[in-house]
Image (cartoon, rainbow, N blue to C red; front, top):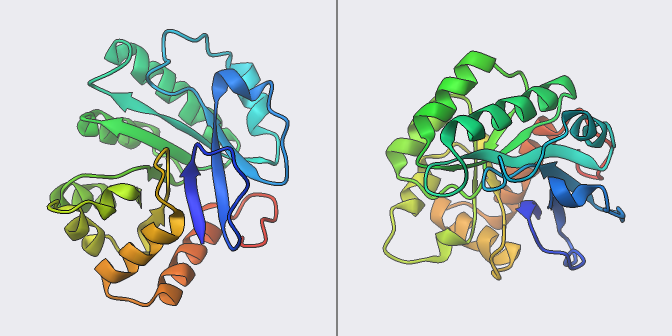
Length: 223
């Protein structure tokens, strides 16, 4: 099972592969183990933490950083939208230069995000992490070429999120734990049930997606 985005620092459970998120301001002190990581300046920190683009470029050149993120736009928290936008664009360009995918945090900023994607026209995949929107939004994002990563919000009752998951094509799908205490196995099992497929089928789909999205990078045993 692949956990595309987690903040956990503990060792991987047996049978899982994780992409651990590292904050940009912590990356210089990282002592990489056997795992793989993403790194980026979160929109909540944009304008508060100085972003040295040369340093981020160096991080992206290291084989254990296999994605840039999480970066993004957040209308409810963080600095001025113009600052968030410029910081996002600067980082997205570095991801493009290194042919590494982007993991995105987006809150109520979908139209600006889509506009930026149209302007930059990236060749690397952009992944919306922790997607919790309605099916209509899922449909729009899929049409715009995004991948959607679902997390523990699927375990809640009385939401339309299962409908969004059902709509999401299996070849645009990832799963994650983020900061939640739920296990990735719980999220896989719930997702397989929602999509009415076997757990084995779901594992195959997501492994294939991982291979497609991370095809540029060091051998993980999966890609």
